Length: 369
Image (tube, rainbow, N blue to C red; front, side, top):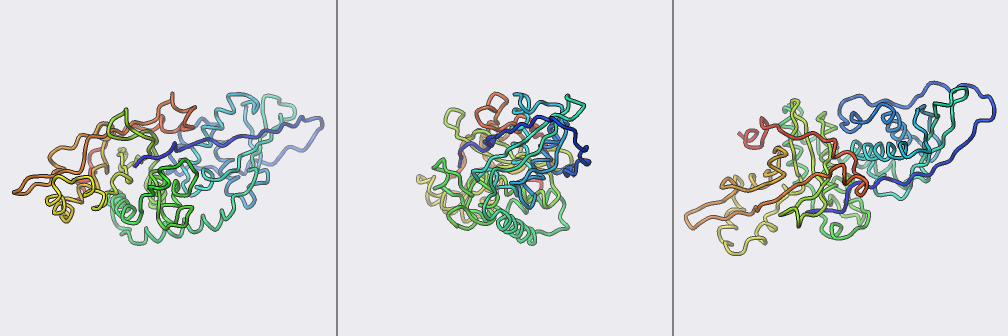
């Protein structure tokens, strides 16, 4: 259940304008500031990068994102490699933090920016951002996504603890979504790679159909709306490091500790499981009718540590045993995060900043008791 690389930074078109005349000092910046603590990636940007991030966010949420937004003031030269690197980090952080802006990663538009030096202070640059073109149906589809998320969350008991709520959301999500095998086999942009695909429909109009980043962004979005901090992790996963393919999953923070969750791999259907095991078909069919056992399978990568998910080896806990023998549907696997060395190639600058998950208090076995 792997995927094509998750985050590719948009191209930047740049325009410059020299200041040759006096002008009135612009009004104070009105770019919204995010400080709610829910959006993990923004907090790991430098101060001026946060200004860029907030300006990009304001641009995407504006009534007409193709019009230049409010100016921000930074000391980085917008013509420099330093600025271009910062822009890529900010764009990547925005996409990871805001699953509701799904159209940024599947559209063909690019951010443009214009800048000028501040009059009488040439060490400061004043920069504005805009999109080259609008994404069709952006407002309509964002409303559909929000409505679908609210509908799913309406079935979650609001009095649950955050840990129990994260479990209920996970279970509702994997019960809702179907893995999009066709999209997974192509390199094409598709809404299946987004929260919209998981909670509404993919680009072919198939309801609740997504690949791994669709699952991951949907889970993050639902957790955010429930007040739980999460982020998306990108890397590779498979039986071994040599055979692993591109993949994404989640980190979730509960009571100050981080946990890894892979909702895509936890979405194990009886049909897929039985197809994977022929030798013990009679026992396998019995196992997949046993809810106690299938619950273990559909949560085997729920609230685990980074150490556990990085090199998973199923033990007897994941065997189904009766008087005729035993069967298991899980094999060894690895989840390996992108590193700093991967960033230029993948466009993923956020995963290397993600924390190591060491939480154990809210593992699945404890929550189900």
